[in-house]
Length: 149
Image (cartoon, rainbow, N blue to C red; front, side, top):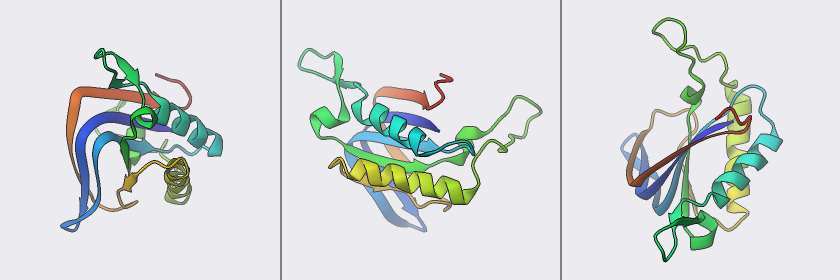
């Protein structure tokens, strides 16, 4: 499982001109699933993302997490995080999970975040979405449950 985590002052997702998910002050997460992922990967990513210390404390040091400050979370499915561009010019998405598995693990991620009393907004799995965000910092972190980076 891979994630692009961005600290945002605001973020929203639009599908067919309808605003379907929106958060203020928190994290915007693009979440990709590979065919080998399981609930274990979801648990790792939930723990890592919700406790990632990338918000400033009173001394302007990145020392606080989303949970510490009561921030919000916007989660958008993103199979293209498994795009492989090493050969040729057209990405291969063969490492991305099939939609059935990817959607199940995406929904599990969202449910587990909500279970920790986090305000969670979402995109729409499989839809063509427009994502807007104001990156705060900017702060952008890449995570991989296999710890590839």
